[in-house]
Length: 190
Image (cartoon, rainbow, N blue to C red):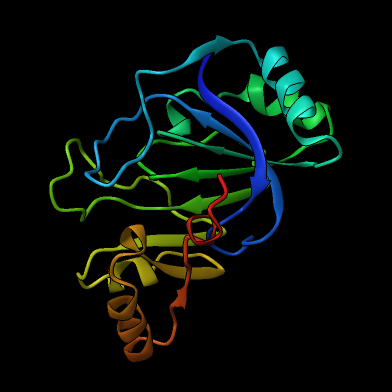
C-alpha cells in the first residue's frame, strides 16, 4: 500500500514541462523538512497500485503523463507501481530531492536538491548521479555545484515566487541556468 496525499489533474507549473497537462500523484511523507514545503504530510489515503492507476485514469481522462511528487515519492515508489503505471500506458515523471535511489523505468526525472536549504531538517545529501532536469529552489545562495550535475536542463526557481528578481539576476550572471517560475501559483491553479 502507498500513502497518497492527493491525485489531481492540472498543468505542470514548473521546469521543462511547464504548461503540459499531467496527472499529479502527490505522495505523503518526506525524509526532509524544508521550511517552504506546502504538503500536508499527515493527510493521506492508503492505496494499492491498482487503485492509484484507476484514480489516475479518472482524474486525467486522456492524459498519458503522470507526475509523482510529494513529499518525497522515492520513499514509496517501487518497481510494482512503475510497472502498473507503464502497463496502463502512462509516462512517468518524478520530482525528487534525490536523496534515495530510484527504481528503473522512469521516463523523466526532475532532481530538486535540498541539501543547501537553510533550516532543513534531515540529511539532504544527493545520491542520484544524473537526471533529465535539475530544478533548484533558489534561496540566494551559490548553486553552481548543481550546474555540474549531469542533466540536459538546469532550472533555477525562485522560492515561493518571493525572490524572482534575485533569481533573474543570478541567471543573467550564470547563463547556463534557465528560469522556472511556479506558473500554477500565478495562474491560481493546482
